[in-house]
Structure formats: C-alpha cells, structure tokens
Image (cartoon, rainbow, N blue to C red; front, side, top):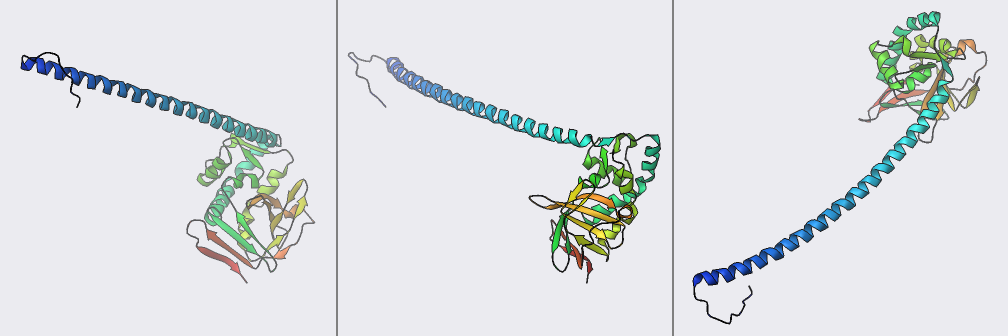
Length: 263
C-alpha cells in the first residue's frame, strides 16, 4: 500500500476517506487496464485459433472434394460396363432374389467380420470379405450402393429398378451358380495361383474340384479380397490348383478360431 504526503492537515475523517477512495480508484483503474490487456490478448488468441481452424477446414474440404472426385471418376468408369435390364431380364433377375438372400446370409454368417484361411500343402491365403464385396461378385450394379445391396438382399428388399447388369452378358451366368455357393466351405475346394478369365485377371482363385464355380481373389497392398464369381460350367479350361486341406476362420473381435474342413 502506498502512502502520499500532504502539505496540510486532514481536518476530518471524510477527508481521509476521500484520499483513501482516490487510492482505491487508482487501483481499480490499473486493474481495468490489466483486464483490458488480458482480454485483448485473449481475443488475439481466439482470432489466431479461428484463422487456424478456418485453414484446417479449407484443407479438409479440399481433400474431401479431391477424394470424392476420384471416386466419382472411378464410379463413372465402372458404370459404363453396366446397362438397365429389359423387361424379360428383370423377370429373370427377380427369380434369383431368394437365392441372393440365402447367399447374403451365408456370407454374413461365415465371412463378414472374420478372416478366412484356406491352406494347401504348399501355401495359404487369408481372405477378407466385407459386405460391399458381395455386389461385385454377381456382376450387378445397385444405384443405392454396394452396402445397401447386401442389406437389401438380407432383408429381401431389393428394388428391381435400382439394378443394372453387365453389358457383356455375364451377370446371368454368375447368378446361375448361386445355389452352389456353400461349396466354398466344402471338402472339395482347390486354390489356384494367378490367371486370366476372359478380360478378368486374378491373383488367386478358390474353385470346386468339379467344373462348377470359382471365386477369384485380388491381392491389394493390404489384404486379399474377393473379386468375382465365375460359372465354370461354361468354361472348359481353368487352372486346377492345389487341394485345400484346411479351411478355418478367425473372428476379428474375439480371435476365436473355427474349423470348417481339415484333413
């Protein structure tokens, strides 16, 4: 506390209080100046943060738009391979809806959320299956999206007018083998190496011993995923591959192992 000298006498308590109040006012003014500076600094900090947030938001939007643009281009290229089915083809497609529901249930129970292992005497593959893979196996395009196609098949809510089929005519061929899809977990599965089927190049294939069906696989930088389903009854030459001696799955959350086939 500061003391200020006075040239004269303080004649009353009121005068003393007045001087004390003056000191108090000076203190309040100093505090007000400090508060103003603090608020100013705080405002500058908020403005700086706002500028940083704006720049981050702009960068995020730019990256999002760029990625979306790339995906749109990819979808445009893929959509050129499909066309709307005619009336007769729609009738044929509807006849497969029950089998599509059974196949979707099969993949959901045994493949989704798991890693599937197929082993031969000389090699093995780890197959990762997601619901979005299902649509591409059968050569169809669904305007609502690949994930919605899987869900709609499970719930028997497929909208026929949302479907497109391959221009090369292979959609109906792929759908013909729907009834044999459970063979992929049977005792007569073979694993092949890389090959080519018409325009389709694959890294591996799981096929039945007899000329029934094959599931081609593609190896990405991170994992092996399903690529397409083939009707082998219409093809005389296809790699025979090695007999699969063990099929088992590992649950992605619990790591539980389940064996389907083991010699």
